[in-house]
Image (cartoon, rainbow, N blue to C red; front, side, top):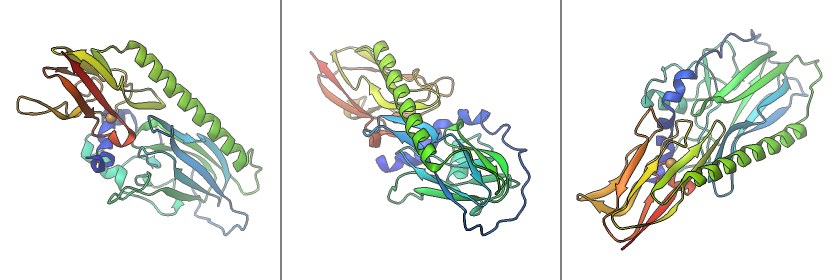
Length: 310
Ligand SMILES: [Cu+2]
């Protein structure tokens, strides 16, 4: 089950993609003049971030803006369990279906030198290693010509982007890698704080009969059931609610042993409205402790229990 997770995650963002591919073209012209500048530097950018328990996932490049010289390179490095891409331009398949999105996200396009005149550049999936999955843990791109280029994550839409300013070789750069590392730390902490606040405000709205299946805003996702441990009396109906997700992350409520009508109780894929069913109701009719999980995010610890008392 968990091995399917990375492949199923892109389904999440189906509708988010509708707004995604607009306005990213038409930037600077390129000269194919890659020199062998001995002073060329490789800069590092982190892709995503998370808390150590993976409960909070950040949808940010760290830093989100960088100034480099032409002939320099950027190494984008996986920094969270969630999958991401480094992408530029318009993907070949319109993101109107999950299949198209997966095909675009999983297919690397472009060479080691960035070509801003190409319609589409894509890293493939950047993520920690998963057996059998074609994930890369880092992605290095060299920049030949000056210009300003906005890259984004195809999985999480244009809200997760990085602006790359490529300056002429003789220009003075405003910052060092150490500065960007500091920026990355500050921005990472901001994202985590945002996720914790979102988690707390969602918990304040929850009750034993109203469990939230995750929460997400523009930059942080809480990969937890809120609350994850629930106690109700037999006969109670519990609503598992998707409405705290403001981005189109998918979750499931999949019980591992609770049977009703001869089959395991399972919500199937839930998406926030209007993309899909926004809630799943379960009326508990058996005393016991019932474990459930999110099929997409159980690897990140998105699991729960409902204790049903007489
Ligand atoms: Cu989930």
